[in-house]
Image (tube, rainbow, N blue to C red):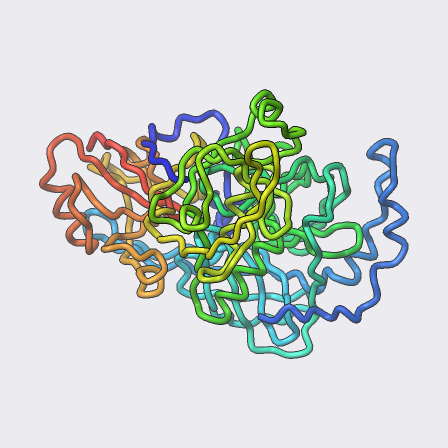
Amino acid sequence: MTTKKYWRGSAAICVVLAVGGAYALSHRDADASVNDAQAPVSSLRATADITGSRSSAPDFSSIVTRYGPAVVHIGVKEAASIDENGDRKSGGEALGSGFIISQDGYILTNNHVVDGASSVSVKLTDGREFRARVIGKDKATDVAVVKIDASNLPTVKIGNPDSSKVGEWVVAIGSPYGFDSTVTSGIISAKSRSFSDDSPIPFIQTDVPVNPGNSGGPLFNLNGEVIGINSMIYSRTGGFQGLSFAIPIDAAMHVKDQLVRTGHVTRGRIGVGVQPLSADKAKALGLNGNGGVLVGSVDPDGPAQAAGLRQGDVIVGVNGKHVGSATELVGQVAQLSPGSDATISVWRNGGERKLSVTIGAQQSSELAQAAPRGQFQQRPQQQPQPQNRPRLGVAVRPLSEDEQQQAQLPGGVVVQQATGPAAEAGIQPGDIIVAVDGKVIRSVEQLRRMISQADDSVSVTVVRDGEQASVDVTLG
């Protein structure tokens, strides 16, 4: 279920933007025992049946009063970098949001909020500020866990995204542009959105206004339960334009559990290539058209082959949970533990049958080969203004030991800033440059030397959010 595509620069009219860790102070662009004994937010469920204009929106003040203190402001100091000429660039400062999930200080946020940070601080609504430790982070899902040393902290209540419906009211709390404890509301616009064929996350789409600094903050339902982590917007301008996306909290908590327990994340696979099931095809197979995905290929050495899945089968469920799309299938299988047994429901020869599959482990290379479908997660950053046009136009730093281990790459350097030829070709801050003209990059000095000795153009291989692509750069 992987594809490889090539970037054509950053000329797309609309782009998907991460909305945290991107707004800097210089104005540049666990344990889930979460007090289940707490009383539910009062007088809110009655508003779920509201029908009328947006002016009849429910009163969200009870949610804000009870759970607002569990939403935190996250400040980040970024590591210093070195540009292609060997000049040292001081690190910047950025911000995002997060929320407390345990009384002893575990906090959920986005990976892109804390990625590349040299230090992380957390400020509570009562004014207290703590130095935070990054417990773990996962680029594929954009989830990170940080920890502060404190006790008896206010916590959120975790909900079930599956029970939410399109059209229901939701509420976001965060720090857009540094304005702490900002509350915005809207409705769920769609569910199971995906920006990559192999994405393990079926995003919740809303029209809740979120902006840079909101990333990592919670998305609440009317019961005051967190159902998602606000992560991205889809925009022509870099600001909110009615399309925002949240990571479902069940997927985030699954990642959190692994990060806290082991420091890294494993994902399941069954070894099939799938495609959408058209209404005509479903009718021809005798299905009612209620979802399902068509198996287009089966890995001859994979778990699905061993379990008896065949090309032409329609997968309609995993462990009794309905599969409505390829995005849902990828997300459900990814959350299964390698080595565990799962029941895959398939439609074959006019009837449904259940097959037992021993889940395999997804390899990092499978994620690295998948490329976005024409839209990129950009990290808006302040751009330096060099006096002369640089050859490549990047400021980079070495990968940390944690980043090297998590990415499982043979080498690479992290792009801190991108201008000139690099930016024009689509390279962005946060990208990892792993090779130039096919040669692995293992240090900042090696990159500088190769660029200085190169001809008029080079092929640069980068990894972005676990996805690998090659881009041709005409040097300055």
